Image (tube, rainbow, N blue to C red; front, side, top):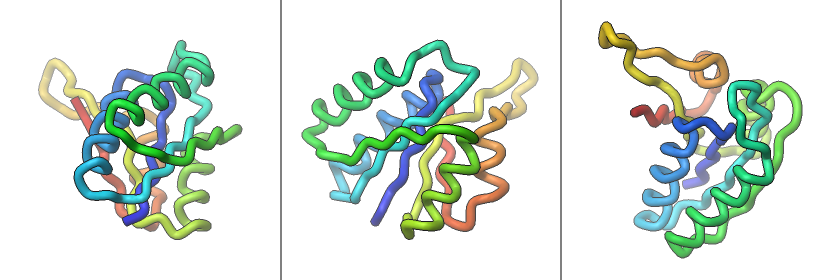
Length: 123
C-alpha cells in the first residue's frame, strides 16, 4: 500500500508520524512523507525533517521525504491524486473540554476534499 503522510510540525502531525512509521515497519507499506508549510507550527521545516529522519531511523525505514510549498491541504490532496496513493495519513483532531473533536484547517480540508482514504491520527 502506498501511504502519504502529511506533516506540518504540530504535535498532532508528530503523532501521525509515529503512527505511520510504526505501521510501515509492521506492514512494509511504501511511505512518502510530505513536509507541509503550516502557519500554526513554530517548528521550521529543517527541524521537522530532522524529526522525520529520526523516527524513520528508529523504525529502520527508508522513505521519500518531500517538501510541499504553498497551500498545504490542496497540495497534499493533489499529490495523492496525481501519484496514486492509497491512503493519506494526517494528524489532527483533539478533544475539546466538552468532548467534541476539533480538527485543524489543513486536516479538515484534506478530509473533505481527498478522493482517497484519509486516516486522521488524533490524540
